[in-house]
Length: 89
Image (cartoon, rainbow, N blue to C red; front, side, top):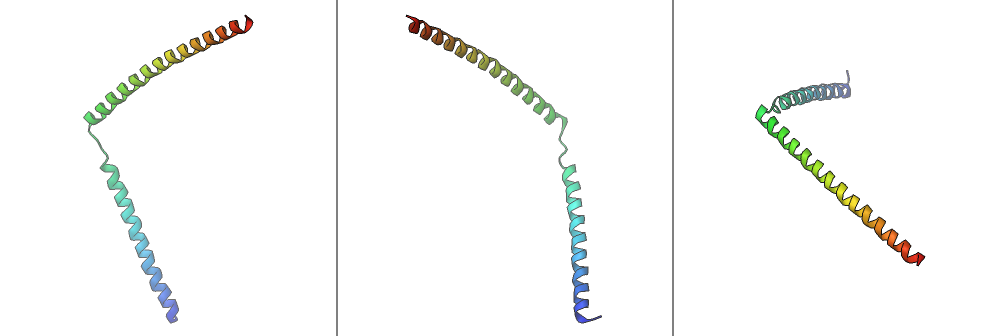
């Protein structure tokens, strides 16, 4: 085996080992991260209550926007009718 082949073999072993260790650390870190995300039931209940209140508020805003748009349509129709009467006269 020549000197260059030995250097390539040593670097291959070093990089292979470093890659294996890096992947093992990444997997261990990922498994640890999943276990740390567990929350208590009280926190989930509070989140559910908050989402319910947000849903009710959004529904109320949608109803109000529908009322505003109905008023806008009515006003537009009145203006159009009045303009039409002025043109006919």
